[in-house]
Amino acid sequence: MNEYKQRNLAPIFIVSSGRAGTTLLRGILNASNQIYFPHESDFIARAYPFYKDKQSLTEEDYQFLVKLFIKNSQKSGWGMTEEYLLSYLKQQNCQTLAEVQSDICQAYFEQEHLKNLQWGIKTPVLIFHLDQIRGLFPDAKIIHMVRDGRDVILSYKKVHQTEEGKAKFGPSGIITGAFYWIDGIRRIERFKSDRNIYEFTYCDLVTDSDNTLEKLFHFLNINYDPSISQNYYQAKQNKDLLLSSHKKTIHAKIYQGIDSNNIQKFKDEMSSFDQLIFELIGSSYLEKYDYPIQHTWTTWKIFTVLRQPLYFVARQFNNWRYHRRDLQRYQRVKNQIE
Image 1 (tube, rainbow, N blue to C red):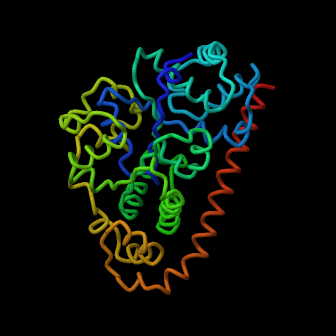
Image 2 (image 1 turned 120 degrees about the horizontal axis):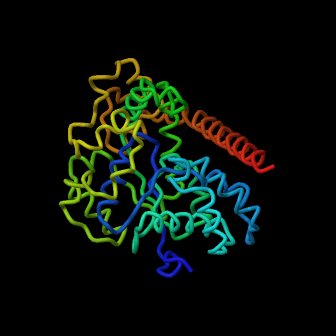
């Protein structure tokens, strides 16, 4: 029996609509020496539609799941070989998808000589798969980070200007970006009574770090040391977690520490027209998180009513898009095995 099962630790998931500071948060939590978030992976979302009801796994299932994990995780499976993972899963004799995910994390911990740590997954896109997380891990703790959607869009825009951004990486336009940001928030709203979901803003993290982190650590039932927020980027646990191609591009700021000036950039960098478009689409959600609104008339109730059908269409489109991707990746892996 692996250490996760022995200690009965509930996993932790960090989600967002992307470009919201989740990599920064991962670094801070890893530096606590109590939790460890490896590289990103959306393996759970990709495997869930096909393995959610299985209570008994065969060696063929193990082979498929290992390949699927490697294909849907950074550093091609967190730097673990297919042979190592397959041997580990067989040794643990896991029989459900939840056990597979837990044992994959434990396999990584053992390979990297990490002990007595609580495991977590930091993958923003899992905000669109909260039902799946809850289905597999009913007791999991979920951290939702919110950043002003206009700054999120600006950040995505900069990503698309990098070499990495030439690949598909988040929304590329003001309209698609606004609906993407809003759909993520609306999915969290469905779980507003869930006591195991903790929500805070990027603005709170960078402008009131100690107070924000102390509350978060209390929610996670771990000890908080104020020095963590100042020295997290020096922790050996974070040494190899950034992809080399990202260190000087989309995650360059991680090594600069917490920057309280890295907010409301849209005021100077986003055109007035784009700001208006965003407010027409999502001013009610800007208002919800106390973000500044220039055109207050966009909060009128008539606009709230008119937006609802658009939000519904955005939700259906995202569901279709992710379902199609699940099928495509499933088939690719299946073809490899056959």
